[in-house]
Amino acid sequence: MHRSHSFLLPVFAAAIGLAAAPSATAAARSSVTRHDTSVCRHVGTAKARCFAIRLDRFRSGRVQHATAPLGYGLADLQSAYSLPSGEAGTGETVAIVDAYDDPNAERDLAVYRAQFQLPPCTTANGCFDKVSQRGGADLPVADPGWAEEESLDLDMVSAVCPNCHVLLVEADTASMANLGAAVDTAVSLGADAVSNSWGGPDMKDTSYGRFFHHAGVAITASAGDSGYAVSYPASSKWVTAVGGTTLRRSTSRRGFAETAWSGTGSGCSADNATTWQQASTTGCAGRAVADVSAVADPATGVAVYDSLAFQGASGWLTFGGTRVLLVHPNLVRPAVGRIGVWGLSWTRSNGGAGAAAYGLDA
Image (cartoon, rainbow, N blue to C red; front, top):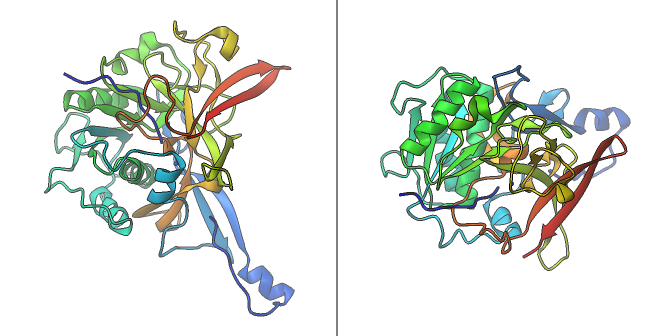
C-alpha cells in the first residue's frame, strides 16, 4: 500500500575577465548574449508539450558549450530549500513521465551524479529503470527536445532526493492519452510520487482526470511557462500544481531571496473546481493554479547535463521552467512549513493578473 505523500519540489552566469580594454570590434566579437529557448513546441487540444526552457549563451552567433556546470547545483538546491535529503528518500520511488525516448538518459544521469559526488544510479544496481508507457522495453522513438526535458527531470530528482529510486516512463507520443497511460503505468510499477513536466490547454477532469486520480500517490504537474494562463493537468483537482520563482542569493538567514517569476503559469481554471481552495484567497471561482512553487526562472536556472545535441546545444546546460520543481516524497507535510518554498495565489485585478506571493523561509 502506498503511503500518503505531499510533495514538492523542486530548481550564474559566467563572468568574463579581460586583461585590457578591447576595441569596440573585438568587444562585439567576444560579447556573450543570452536567449531563452523552449525546447518543446506549442501544441493543440489533447496534446502536451514539455516546459523546459534552456538558457543559451551565444558568442559570435554560435551557442557556447560549457565543460562544467553552469547554474544552481545540488548543494545550492539542498541549501535553498533545507532539504532533508541526507536521510530521506531511501526506499522511495520517484517516477518521471515524459514523451518519446532519451537514448542517453542513463549515461547522462551518470555524468551528473558523478559531478556532484553522488553514488551511481543505474539499471544494474536497481536504482534506475526506464520503460515504455506499457511498462516494457518497447521504447518510443527519440526526440532531442523532450530528451533535454528528461535530462532536466532526472538530474533534479538526483539533486533533491539522491536516495530515491528513479523510474522513467516514456510515452509513445505527447498526446494526453499516451502520457496519461504512462502515469498509470508508473503507479502500477510502485511509484510513490509521479512528476509530470508537461501540459496542454486547460480541459475538464471528466476527459482525462482518471489518469491522475491515484490515492496515496503524490501526483504533480508543472503549471507552465507562459505567464497568466492555465495548463492541464496542472488544473486538475487531483494533482499538485507546481509554479515557479526567481531564486537569488542574498545575505538573509536563509541565504536566498525568492520572488514570483513572471513567466510561471497561473490563473483560474474555467473547466475544473475544487472543494479545498477558498475563493476568498485565490480570487477564482474554479480551480486556482499554482499550489506550490520554487525556482524556475531561466535567469536563475539549474545546471543540467545532456549529451544528445539539439539546436546546437549539448553538454552542461542551464535550464529553467516550472519543471525544475520536483516531487520529493516526505519533504513537505500538509502544513507546508519546514522548508522555504513559495505558494502563489493568483487573482484577477483590473482586468489582468495580479500576483500575491507568500513564502515560508526556513
